[in-house]
Image (cartoon, rainbow, N blue to C red; front, side):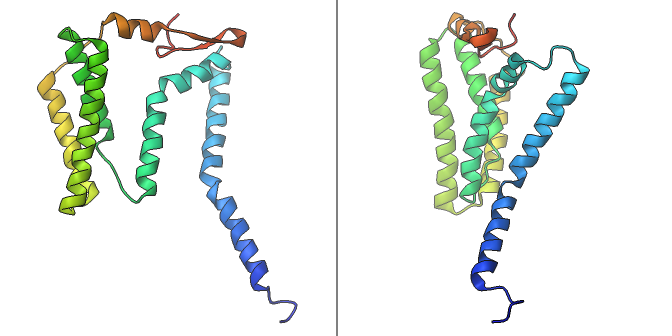
Length: 187
């Protein structure tokens, strides 16, 4: 081989190095945008640059982080699920209506988990056994879950149960006066 022709090992190493850099590019861009937006927010709003604001940001969006992890597994396996948000809304409508009717919070939590799991299982079975595209099944599931929300109630249902109120007001303290809680915007 001549000096100008790269060896297959060198070309493979270069391709691997390029793949590694490209693999983390979206994460790096997301992190850079987060830091930029946090810096701009800190300049515009006094008190924005604090550890409590960062904790509140993650606590307020914790359910989105959990859903994002689940959706990552779905997408990595080549699927798609359009019904996730609607199933979450349906679960919360069921929980709120059961609590309003006087059901026990623990039984309500179990029922909501079972309903959400069965809803997902039925869509998965329809995809697997009837060989229907996941896009179509989950789109139909999304519309069904939204419709069931409207059947339960046309307006918002407030959750005033003492168990949920106590859980929302619970604070886990960290050094420096920082804390996390499900309702991080409490005084």
